[in-house]
Image 1 (cartoon, one colour):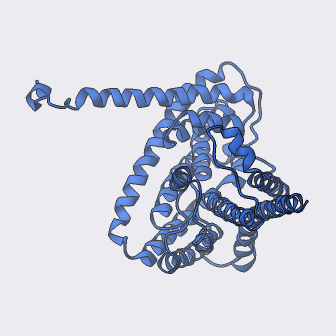
Image 2: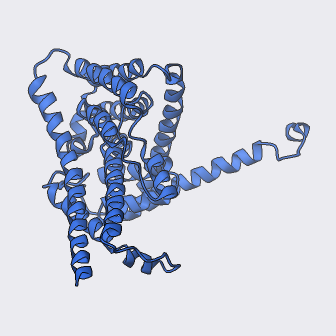
Image 3: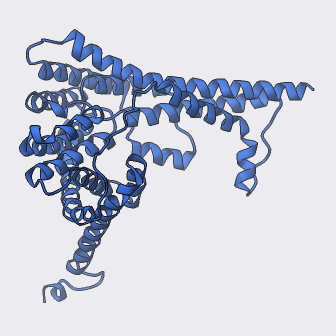
Length: 393
C-alpha cells in the first residue's frame, strides 16, 4: 500500500515539475516581450538617436555579461549536439545564459529567442530528470534495468514522460496567444504556375544563403583579434546594430512580429528598402552572434529571406508574393541547415500544405546547386596521389 502511495506521490511531483518547466519557459518569452515594450516604447520613447544609443548600451551590457558570466548560452547546433551525446544539458550556467540572452533580445538584437528557449527547456528538463531520479531512490522506487526494447525503457521512465506532457501543455496554454498569429499568413490560392516561379526564386534564395554563410565566415575573422576583449567586442556589435537600424529600423528584433506587415506593405516599402533590409539582416545576425550577443538565427534569417523574395516580387509584379516569400525562405534555410530536407519539414509546419510544392521545388534547386558545386570541386581538385602536372595538363 505504501508503495502505491509513493508511486502516486512521485507522479504528482513529476507533473508539478513539468508544469513548472512549461510555465517558466512561457514566462521567459512574455518577459522578453514585456522588456522590449518597456524599454523601447516607455523608457526611451522620444529619445534622440534612440536606436543608436539603446543598441550601444545593450552592446556594452552584453560585453560585460560575456566577461563576468561567461559565454552562455551556446548556439542551438552546439546545444543539440551536447544533448545527443550526453542525453542532458548542464543547468549550472542557466541563470548566466538567460541573463545575457535577455539583455540581447530586449536591447533589439536581430536574433530570435529560440536559442535561449532551447537552453532553458533543456537545462530545466535535465534538472527535473535529476530530481525525479533522486526521488525514486528516496521513495525506494528504483527504475528497472534498461532493456533493448525502447518502448519498455520509455514506459519505465513514466514520471519523466508525465513531466514532459504536463510541461508541453503548460507551455502552450501559458503563451496566451503570444505567437498565435503564426509566422506569416499568405493570401491567394496556390496555382500550378507557382511552381515555375519557384525555380528562379529558389535560386535567388540559395544565393542569399551563400551570402549569409560568407557573412558568418567574415564576421568570425573580423572579431578574432578581439577574442579576449569581450566588452569591446559586444560594444562594437551594439554600435553596428544601432547604426544600421537607425537607417533600416526593420532590422531590429527577431522579425517575427514585423513579417506580416512587411508582407502586406511590400509595395509601399519598395524593392530597394526590402532588398537592403534583407541583406542587412543577414549581416547583423552573423555579426551579433560573432560579437557575443545571444539569440537564435532561425527567425531573423527567415525574415531576411522573405524580404529578399518580396523585393523581387515588387520589382517584377508578375511573380506572386506568396511564391516569393515561401520559396526564398525554403531555399535560404535549406542552405544554412546541415540537411536541406529538414527545411521541407519546417516549411510544412509553417505554411498550409497546398504551398508545400513551392518549398519542394526551392529545396530541390538548392540540392541541385550543392551537387553541382561538389561535382565541380571534385573535378578541379587533384585526386589523392595524382601529380599536380596531371591536373594542369
